[in-house]
Amino acid sequence: MQSLTSNYFQLFNLPQSCEIDQEALSSEYRKQQGEVHPDRFASAGESEKLRALQLSSNLNEAYETLKSPLRRAAYLLALHDVDVKKVDQKDLSMDLLLEQIRLREKLDELPKDESALDDLGVLRTEVAAKLKAQEKSFAESFDLREYDDAKRVYHELQFLNKLREEIDAGEELRLGY
Image (cartoon, rainbow, N blue to C red):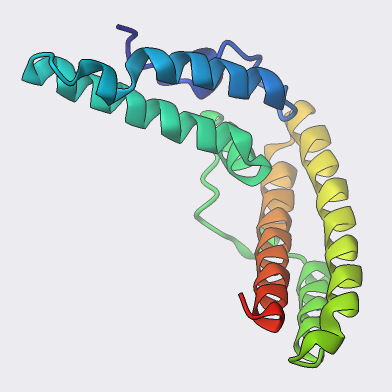
C-alpha cells in the first residue's frame, strides 16, 4: 500500500505548476483510488482498514484541491508559506471592490423569474472571461515568484468564483431546481 504524501503534486506525479493536465490528474486519481479504496480492505485487519481509509481520504482531498483552479492556487501559495486566509488591505484593491459592487448590483437587479435567464447567461460569460484572465494573471505572478501579487489575484479569483456560484444558484432558482 502507498504512503501518505504531503505534496499533492508528487502524489499524482505531476509537475508543481498552476496549469495541470486534468486528464492525467483524473487518470492517476482513478488508478490510485482503485488501489487504496477502503472497500478493497473490507476483510483486512483494523489497522489496514484504517490505513486504507486515511490514504483514500488524503487522495480525495489532494484530487479535489488540484482539480479546482482556486483551491490549487491557494495550495500553491501555501507551499510557499503564503497565508491566503489572512487578508490585508493591500490584498484588496479599490478596483476590485468597485468591480465587485458593479457585478453584484447587476445580478441583484435581474428579475426573479425566467425572463432573466438570458441576462444571467451574459453575466456568466462575463465572469467566466474575467476568471480566465485572472487565472492567467495568477500563473504569471506565481511563476515570477511575486507571491504578494499572486495572493492579491487569488482574492480576486475567490470573489469571481463566489459570484459564479451565485449566478448558478440564481439560474437554478429561476428554473425551479
